[in-house]
Image (cartoon, rainbow, N blue to C red; front, top):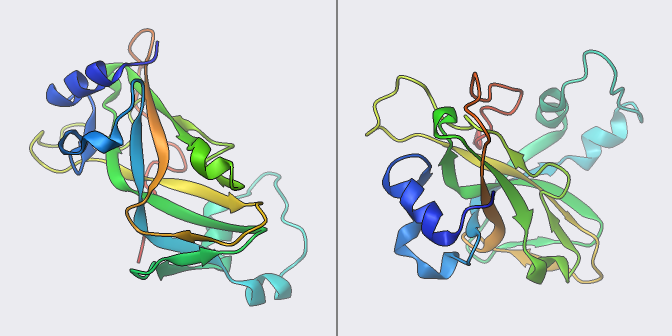
Length: 199
């Protein structure tokens, strides 16, 4: 079941979902069944020189680690105030400005979907990995008053004909919250449990 805007706000009020900064202060972020998330101020850019010197094939078999590949062949860039121009046929990694925590006992998971206004220009955001698992960003036993949550790393690719400008704080994707049937035995602790910018 997808939560309505009213139900998302109620879940935020009771701490069943935690999002910082608090989105309730900005009515422009809300639609009937989703919440817009904004682009953070950092990107990971692939280093073409390092890639050209590397082996031409990445083996996706046992031992494959996407984090190792990303760490080895990309570098962090703070997006300037005037934005970062993303050229056609380019792929970068970014993060949401918002940090999300979904305590698994709350029985909520979420999906991150792109925005149609951007997709119509050829900009894809988080297209192949939309699931935000129950337990994402939540640290059990941590004081409820302490900040919790992780930004969501976004796979951003551009296949449109025109360069586009990515601006920190722009609406980049939308969060759709779903109710989980039953309480998971444990929260998410996979490869991407910690994925905030390292810069």
